[in-house]
Amino acid sequence: MKRELVFILSLIALTSVCDTINQLFLKSAINSLVSPRGNIKAVLKFIIQLILIPRVWISFLFSVISLCIWLFVLSQVDLSFAFSADSMHYIFIAVASRFILKEKVCLKRWIGIVLIVVGIMVVSLS
Amino acid sequence: MSQKKFTFKLLFFLVFTDFMETFTHLCFKKSALIENEVSITKFSEFFVFLQSVFSSPFLWLGLLSVLGTFIIWSTLLSKVDLSVAVPVCSFSYILIPLASIVFLHEKVSLFRWSGVLFILLGVIFVSLSASEKERALE
Image (cartoon, rainbow over the protein chains, first blue to last red):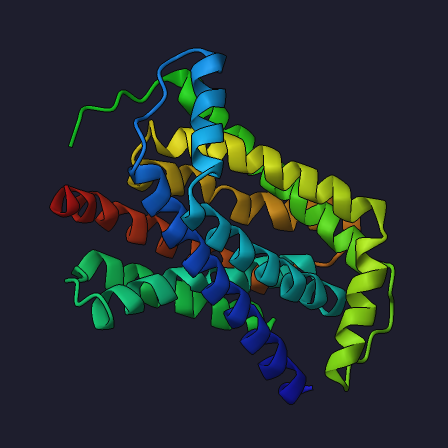
């Protein structure tokens, strides 16, 4: 029972890592475009421009991997548990920012991360 | 950082993505439920599992919803700061357990709700600090 929980949690961690990579690529692609103004036509043009950027395809690839693992996780555990545990991607982003990108992570963010960790532990124990 | 106005219309779309996300995960869960007892010992069995899940109409409904969410979310992110968008969208941490109770008949204990509350607070704290981060990046 305990080993199963660790297995599922590590799979959820894996989807979170994939999601993090996916979001990073997507955000950097969006940043390279001009924000659309108002009408539907401008929005559609924006989306077409976005799809043509190769980074969006890398992002897409990672979301497919993430989806496949996620579906397996959902077949094993409750949705209310899995979705709460999936919030661990906030932790990965902060840790990656601090140790890979050498960004400064402020106190407010660490407090938030501690709260998320406590929350995931409580949800996992229930 | 350019001034980005936060209008009621934007708030509506942000809350709308919460509901879309909840719908997506309900569909995914429904599609994964088809194969009741999956015990995967070999890696190849994982593909058998995926094959059965991908033949479920619920999965495709979920993917359609993902596509819709992606389009709305991408457009929103170019208009709203991430530090504003994320707390509003963390509303789905409450919506999803609620939907799990109503549509999937899962049992969510008071203990689990307290865990959800911690996560929600954490997400809000993390995104509050994002405004400082974004300013530094500009």
